[in-house]
Amino acid sequence: MCSRTLGEPTIRTRILPNVSQRSVTVSAESDVNKFLNSIELEAFGQPLERIGRVLSVAVDGDVVSATIELGVPAVSRLEAVRAQLAADLCAHTGAATANIELSTRISSHKVQGNLTPIPGIRNIIAIASGKGGVGKSTVAVNVALALSAEGASVGILDADIYGPSQPQMLGLTGEQPVSEDGKTMAPLIGHGLQVMSIGFLVDPDQPIVWRGPMVTSALNQLMHQTQWQDLDYLIVDMPPGTGDIQLTLSQKIPVSGAVIVTTPQDIATLDARKGLAMFRKVSIPVLGVVENMSTHVCSSCGHEEAIFGAGGAQKMVDDFAVSLLGRLPLDAKIREHADSGTPTVIADPESTAAAAYRDAAVCIATAQAAQRADYRSKFGNIVVETSK
Image (cartoon, rainbow, N blue to C red; front, side, top):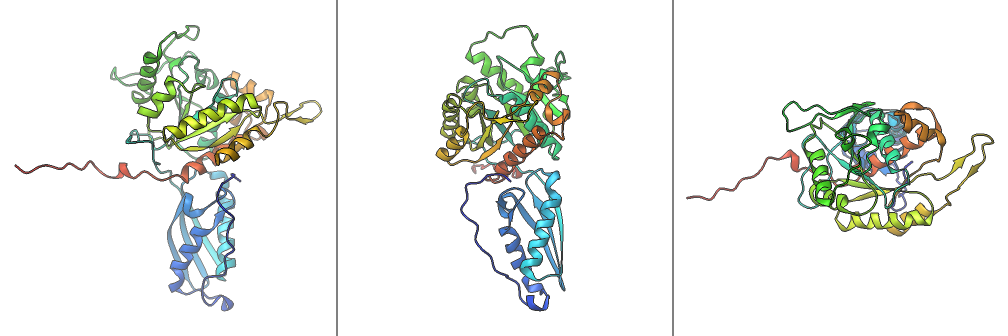
């Protein structure tokens, strides 16, 4: 279950009439709707009303039916959610049967300032860190693949202009994007993800020696000149630090949420805290923190050890009142999978490490779903004409 910062849940009583006779009247449908919205979903750690909506409720004798739309891609958890909702409804209403129909629809969420979502992309999530070496790119690609496995349409933008790594991690080294009009590029496809990186446009051994304006211009082109196709999420693999790329992201790219990746030791969390504070300063919602390399399990004896210390990320989320979205293991196979071009979520989906990435991905999507939705794309431009 995803961690959360809300208060303690309230104890609810039965709300529908005639429960002792196990008969539910039609007049109680609005109460059923209200009750459903109040249920805290165990799979997500959030009440339904924050991450979904009730589309319809029907009562027929002692049978209650509900159609519910979730804002989180989580095909692996839908049966558990359905079972919980049905059990809660029966327990609280006295109904003999509860039929729950679930669907998923990912909405666009509010972005910073006056920026509007980019066509073809509902949500842009920045995966960032305060310093290099914490495994941010590996986390980004595995989270993207996990979201895709849960049913979302996902892309990944490699924003680390000086050190692009996604081409290697996704087995796309040497590939180049195609441009049919000479102005825009089609993203490459890697393990089902739409992918774009400066690494596709330069020789892998060629160093990129660019000043800030050229770097920010390159990021803008990669973002806006790529033909992204109907993405629920675009995961942006950010470079470390709080420099030009981060400033460009905050000013020109509509970001709906940021995730901070850190390792447990103080030397990493010191810089991660600065990164988190930077996103807040530019009004980009911080969805939470992922602690990478939390513990190492010896492949020979099974001994588990926190070789980078413990508690660093927890103190950080406590101080900033954000969620701890996941703790990921330190495992040699994760590195091997990434180097081979087939990340862990794809290479070893039944492993403990892959499960940890999937849990973190669902927690990230849950935190995003709980943010304020953006409805501006639903309406056309309003033009006020002055009379002559």
